[in-house]
Amino acid sequence: MKIIDRYIYRQFFSTFTVLLLGLPVIFIITDLTDQLDKYLNRGLSAGQVALSYVYFLPQLIFWGFPIASLIATVFTIGNMTRYQEITAAKAGGVSFYRLAAPLVLCAVVLSIVGVGIGDLVPVANQKRAVTIGERQRSISVLRNNIVFRTESGRTLAANRVSSLTSEMERVVVETAPAENGMRHQVAAGSALFYPDRGWVLSSGYFRWIVPGEVPRVMDFGAMEIRELQDRPEEILTVSKDAEEMTYRELERFVRTVERSGGNSNEYRVDLAQKLSLPLAIFVIVLFGAPLATSSQRGGAAFGIGVSLIITLIYLMMFRVGKAVGASGAVDPMVAAWAPNVIFLVGGIILFWRVKT
Image 1 (cartoon, rainbow, N blue to C red):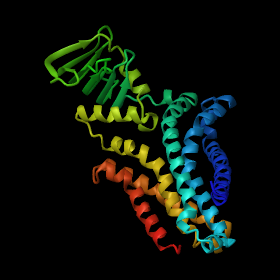
Image 2 (image 1 turned 90 degrees about the vertical axis):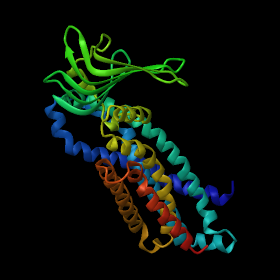
Image 3 (image 1 turned 30 degrees about the vertical axis):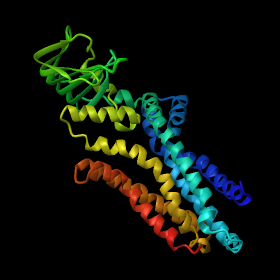
């Protein structure tokens, strides 16, 4: 490794680490100020509140990655430009592309780490929700597009669940694949819960699925599943939001919703963004490196301001993309990846215009 590479790594990671440690503190102070009355009304102890923020850390770190990456990139390149280090390197035959290579490598590594943290976030979010009482308070009498892991290990999906009438509509119950890959799937137009019998499904079919074979299907008018004893209130209480599902859980949920005839657009956007958001770290570094060469005159404050504005616009585009994709106006995959494509094209243009 060359001296210039070590120097760039040191500059980048020193700034990145300080920001990654400092940003969660700012987020926690802001959130605690906003939520303190709610915590006091729920009677939460100081220990419970503190533990909830420990569980909140993976989410805060995940949010902080793109901000810290961009600011660290702007500071690293900006300082090298300001102190004529890039000019000296160019005079020595080192191009700007070669100088930016360590930053691009850092971005690739951080994107991969971001994917891993992104899969840890749902688990931590679930524990935080339970700790501060939000999981118990999320009980409702009616919900749409629900996925639920039953006590017997089956996956249950329904377009509509009501605890008032003890009914479900457009139900799919699926077992986990056996060692030979075989699984069972039950789909029904409706289901009714009886306290002494469990769920009774009506107007559906039972399907045996074996890899490499044609699925066998049997229609039924009514079917009682003894193992499915979860009450409607339990299903409504512990059903997960997209933010509380890992990539694999959400992927399976999307397939189940689609098989049950439901609208999966919103969840397909969420699924795609579980990859597109971490990879935004790579794109935003690629965008910020050449941009920093033209912002050296404004000083540190200007660099931070530009970085925050760019990050805000970037993240806002993800929010807009989610809404547009969920509505069906744009394909969910396009909506989830459009911000990355736009900024990647912008980054490539900026790189092309930099004097090497």
